[in-house]
Length: 460
Image 1 (cartoon, rainbow, N blue to C red):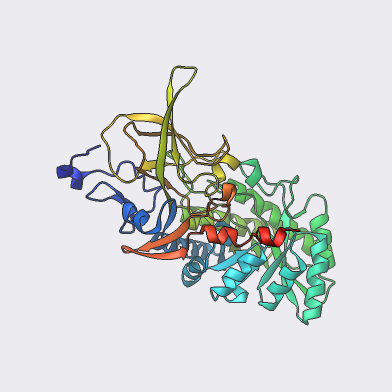
Image 2 (image 1 turned 90 degrees about the vertical axis):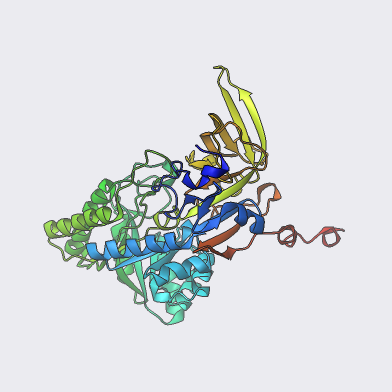
């Protein structure tokens, strides 16, 4: 790579794979990473480091692409999966692009409502909804509540009776399809906490109970097979089994399934070699299989719904860190691995420690012609597993004060963040046409201490 000031305008952005980074990502004339017209150095100067940067245009484009692709393929509605990352700005972006929102807690519901999302455009998830959350959902006019257990049938029916309404519900079913993904994010096999098994008869029994309750209306089935899925084969098999189950409900109970919600889980590229199926192709393949299976089963095609989250907000986000220390370590093999410590870590991105997730990282504040060296980008927490990027090739002249950028961190980073070691959580900043806006402000020490009543209160 070039590093002379006179030739900076010709720097190729070979380190910014457009399948991984936001579409607006480039190296500007100074050699710095620029997202949506915002220089990462200016971003850090104004908002400090570490900081999450979201490309608003990229997120909106992806939301619109999902809606158009799935509606063209035959879906009735696409919901944004709020668990990936939610703030009022994000809720506004996706709803303005025509999506609904699925939430999994009272807190996520509160954010969606604060953003002005109409209740009927919201689906309420969760495997252990508190009565207060159910009552909140009913008061908001939530369009669908997803029943996840026999206990929830009783809770939702009771709350709806007291509210004097008839609540539409979906039943989350486990159809025995396990996505080829990490064990902790594969969610349709039998041995896990979500949903009701089709094979055991629990799902059919739940529906039998629901249709007898006057305060509940059985709208359909929900199936989610996992996350970070690169092809449609798992969805195809899930669709086949949901269609077969739908026919059995009609034949055995006379129950009509009006809606199939096949969840989300569409994957994104994090590193070179990741190759998720293109959105429109995935949509066409899944919806085509559903139509075919319904025809073979002799049932009317229900309305179709989907819930992408990561695939919309993940690629739009980048994390910026400042390098603090650089420490070369000689391994037993004689290879030198250099530990590059940054000012964040597992408190702002737990996925590497939790899932052994892989990420792409680049030197963001400048370019370098130095030879690449094997590095491990690590955080500042008191854990040996505090790793941001396990293996990366970065320039050998990397030094304290340099900025690093980690791609595809828009999903499941800020939403899963913590205050471990009492680190305040970073700001989330959006960028659009060179203008920045605060999505979530940086936490302060005062924010952290505000939860502590202090020694005077605790003293005997």
